[in-house]
Length: 107
Image 1 (cartoon, rainbow, N blue to C red):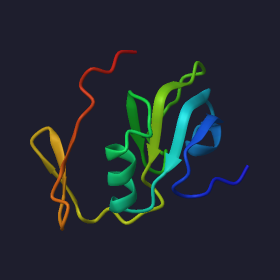
Image 2: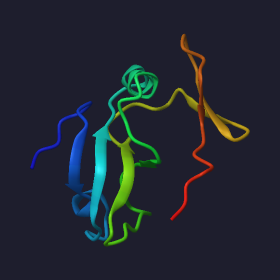
Image 3: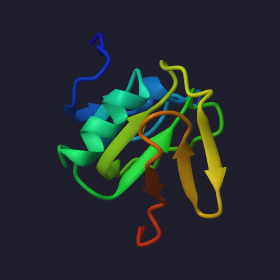
């Protein structure tokens, strides 16, 4: 299956998104290409909680039971404008919005 950017997929295998090539399915999965798209997805509440953010998948081990909520893959975008500020992330630029860290995630 070819995964296109900025489309939310449901029940997608995480095996091809980590270097171990293991793991179950993500309830929802999206590869976000830009800050604007990420902002729109979060503001329009198109995704289910909890949120798991991944990159290239080289330091990720996905359990066989899969992941609840939404996996956001940032590996196909330019994220040079993201900066960490305390326990939040800030995007430099026009939006200047905060993205809260998912502190209530339970395994």
